[in-house]
Amino acid sequence: MMRLFLGKSADLADALAYEMNALDYLRRSLFDQSENSNECLTVTLGDLAENGIQKKHLALSSHENVCAGAVKVALSQLRPLAFSATFKMQDMIVEWILRANNYTEWRFKGKLRKYDQLSATNALVEPEFFGQRPLVSKAFWEIFRFFEPYRGTVTHAGDGTLQISKPGFSTLNLSSEELAAYIQALCIISKTLVGDMVLNPHLDALAENALARLAGYHGVACLRSRYVRQSKLKIIVPPLQLVSEKPLCVNLDWDRLRIMMRETLLMGAHDGEIFFPVTVEVQRNEAISSWQLPLEAVPVGQLALTEGDPRFDPYLTHLTLT
Image 1 (cartoon, rainbow, N blue to C red):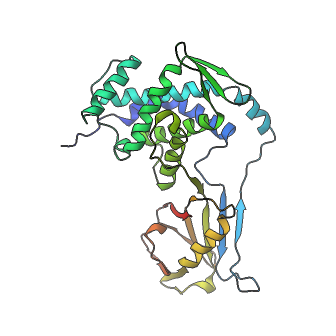
Image 2 (image 1 turned 180 degrees about the vertical axis):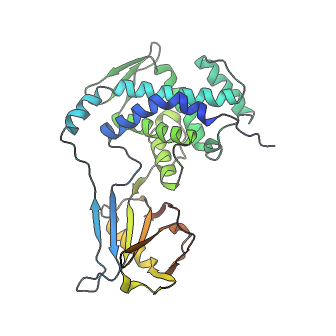
Image 3 (image 1 turned 135 degrees about the vertical axis):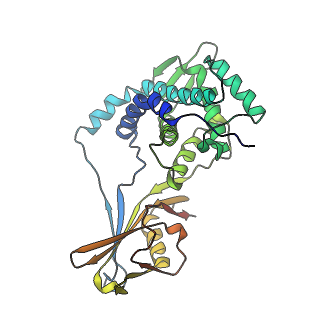
């Protein structure tokens, strides 16, 4: 019989609040990390070029900061603190999980020994996030095991690499990219565990991708590392493109839209996945109606949307790039 994980998310949220807020600011400002897209492909149905090709517009929004360069230089000096804060966050998650497994001895060797015992006997009860992702769970615990000896002494190298020392161990050189991946993975995991973030295929891919970049530290070889991108698709439907107004009905050639997304966003020809929320906006006089489409559930060919359609909740879909 499967045992339920009884750890309270509110307890973990209180413990992680300070580090999570600080790391969120640092990773946005220093590593340009964001789980949200700042680009949007807009298509107005019926707006065709002279050759009959559908016009499209790809917009990139930016919040330019004239001080951004100086801020990055200053924040770069905080890389050692960022590593320490990330490890502390991971340690608090470890304790939270072990506490739910009736273990309360907090020496680092004891934590890992208890994890090994519970894992070896299939007795470890974990949150649903880890329970459904055994490879991610394994990577999480093995990163903790690898980084634990290095939590003491951190020296900041001038090229963005962290040189982490521990008597009796070889010096660990953690690159800027690896530090960024460690921070991103732990922030996504933490926000999911405390309920601040609802996991979707895009976030799942980002977390797995970040952990895959740290494979040299956790040894889990089956995690996927690939190009992951998020964009938005907005489809504007003028009145002349409506099938009917009462009831409101729109037909979309989704096969054609998929091809358009692929041609527009594949400029660099990456292997990987593009995730995108889709908004369909219908213009009727001064009124605007909109749908948020779960396009993974949409059949190929023509798609009819009608007023009262249940597909109003935002959902991320994706294109697989090969």
